[in-house]
Image (tube, rainbow, N blue to C red; front, top):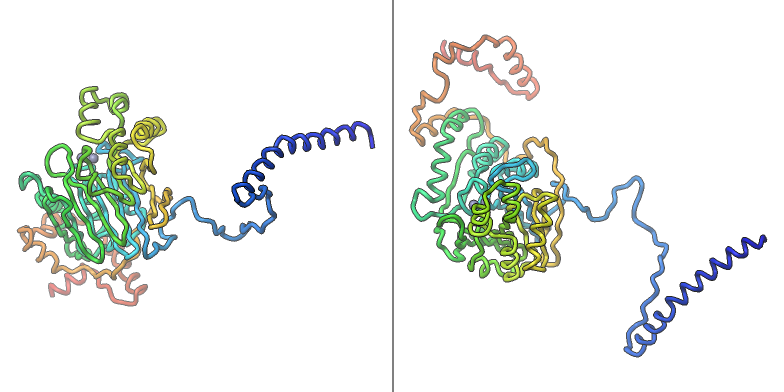
Length: 452
Ligand SMILES: [Zn+2]
Ligand SMILES: [Zn+2]
């Protein structure tokens, strides 16, 4: 062996000896200390050769860091909360406005707020629409109910064949209550609905409105199937807004909708497993990015809404297992600002919400992930078979709304404008009849037969 190699070996051995000498005294001191205290001597950390359960060809069994809708069962005692909107009234592609979906292990699902843009988020979860039939609205700002008509109409087209049930607060006058707002929505939809009656399974185009007293303090507004939902006043803009608490199976979900910090939330959301509370954009960003004047930024950012520092104060009071802050544009240059301001008053578990954040809540643990969804979703599976269209729906619609029945359809004037394309459409009916094995008569031919 060459001397140089010997030298190298000496250095290596010497180096090992030196590092052992550096660590050994501490280790032996610890051992002696542990013996004195009667504690078991900790074993040195040695990497053991174990069989690692990964395969180059098989699916890895490790828990996913990402939630893929429709790939996981909900356990019987588990709650899953999905953010379907965490943004603002000023719409943006990256964040829909307020909407949180709560799914329970007993099969019940609830939507809390349904702000502008949230219907697309909901559809991308591919949940049968019969299961999305309960909506709780905290107040009547569009960023909290602006997508209700999308869920109402689009949900029925995508397979909901049960009524949509909506709960919302009364107001300081009848015109400021939920019933008035939804009456107006139904009026707005008169033409939309008239144009669908008789064309499609019409059972889902039914709205059930449950208006409750906004002054109720922890009042039960829903109690079915082991699920209790209570409401209590929120302080926001003018009288009317409320917050909610849902309790089921020993788990408690709290949702503020919008509010200035208030005593009711502190009392009734206390010790929630998951507490979602609004947390507004910090005042400097309201000025620099939202182009507010400093006066408006201070007013809106601290007096109408909950500033991040105040959000932290609320959460320090109620000590939830998970605090969720939403209602700010969450970008690379705003997240730190909001986070640090919250941390000046709260040091507990915290999520800064963005769309498609998912929390699995059980008594043992709460996990937080992001969902990865497909953008190009179609209708989800049906929970109950669809019915073919029924022309009698036009008569019922006419009676209900006062729209003359003869106005639901085409006038002679409009019909006179149709091009004759029967020769290309008739084969489509023939094709369908052959494919399904049932006769679908061509409408124009039917009409002719009727006329005979
Ligand atoms: Zn609001
Ligand atoms: Zn809002």
